[in-house]
Image 1 (cartoon, helix red, strand yellow):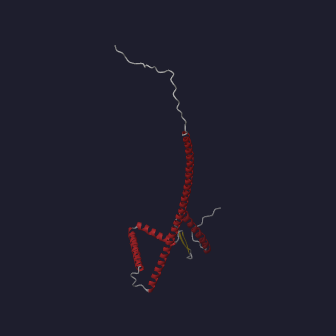
Image 2: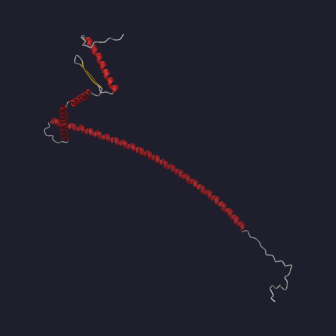
Image 3: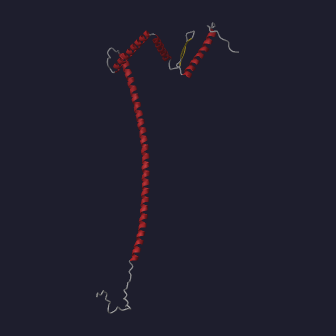
Length: 240
């Protein structure tokens, strides 16, 4: 059977009232946490028990920031509804900003060592401690920056060293390849020279064969069998 409806009214029994408060408080805080996680909402819950004990939950780092945001939104909403309240709001904002500016200017002058009149010994000691803390923070930051720069320079140096080693290996490899090429060229030249000497020897031997001495003898001409006529023939034309 399902649960019956509970009448929403004050529980007279103090023990039952305390038990109900504890259960419902835990359920409310659980729902608030789930709402903040599931919906990415900024949730703040404040609970005061009947005995005046405080219970709260804030989805952000602090409840104060949620309350300040609530007050700003409430004032803004009220300002939109009432123009006169808007003017008062901006007047308060201007006065607050002016006060903050005056305080910052005064603090800045004191940190520079100016306008120290009217300060007591305790005020001067506090100012000195503040300067020492600030100086310590500046020194720590400077050391951190220098350390980071040194580490970065070391990384760059190691990277350049590796690149130099790689380039040296490449140059050495190219040098070895050049030596091998020179050896091959020298061997080819020696082979060409040896072939050239063989060809020269063959040509020289052939030329020597051409210069072998030859014995030539002149023979006497043979007597002609038919002797020439004693009276040669006269050629010409006779005219009558």
